[in-house]
Length: 159
Image (cartoon, rainbow, N blue to C red; front, top):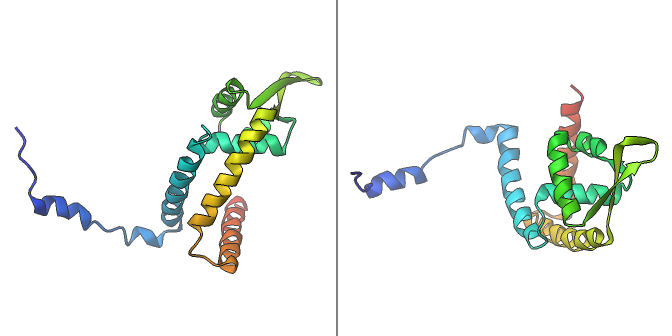
């Protein structure tokens, strides 16, 4: 039979520290990502979209005629994962696949009218949530943050 924890044992978890880890860029980015991802997931839920399906739908709408492989490469995800996302979007009639007339093994993707409507609402809600998350930053700070994140990404791909 287990004994109830003393209040001092419960409080001990409240005093955990990650101060040393916060010196690492990756840890800071991961913590910021978790906040942003949670908020985006909550907002997109009303459109029955997850962050990945929102991203894929956005890219299909911006790049009609793109292939599954092109999207998987752009997002750095496995083709098998892209298939699952596209299967869901297609089942919900948000995206349509059609055979490439030049290569019958390949499918080209385009958004449906319903997909564009869902994307319009989801994009507006996601932008509003982004503004809410960045409310502590002024316009110049936000632009600087976006620029610095781009430079980190570019620096990593230069290796």
